[in-house]
Image 1 (cartoon, rainbow, N blue to C red):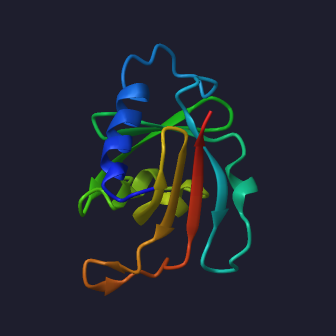
Image 2: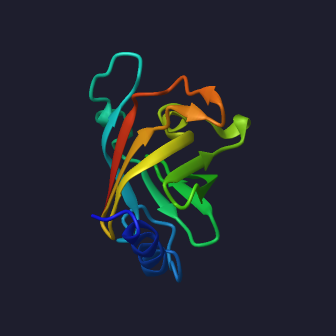
Amino acid sequence: MQKPLIPALFLLALLSFGCGKSTDSPDNATAWVVTFFNDKVDKDDDTALFTGYSFDLNADNSMVIYLPGGSTKAAKWRLENNDTQLVIVMDDADMFAPVDGLVGQWDVQEYTATSIKLTASTTIGTVPNPNQGEKVELKKQ
């Protein structure tokens, strides 16, 4: 996929799932789920930690995190650097494992209407990213 298509596909995907949500159920077809996650500590596949979690990335840059058991948490997301980086932010009081592993700055490797592939940025501004090497993949349910 060519880089100029990433912003267009991202906006198309946002428009297709960011508006008109009628329920707060993780079963909603607009939710994203983690299909692959590895952390920098052990480089192992830690995807199972996200079982039961799903995420809505809304057009207003709000993010709803659906937890196992039915409760939700709020976060924010934004695109930076010509849509080549995705940043996920949560209030410190709301951060919890495993979702805290998604917080930070990610390089967008792939973005389609049904798939997002990210790798942790090598730097955050001019500072080396301590999470460099982490990878996450999400699929639309």
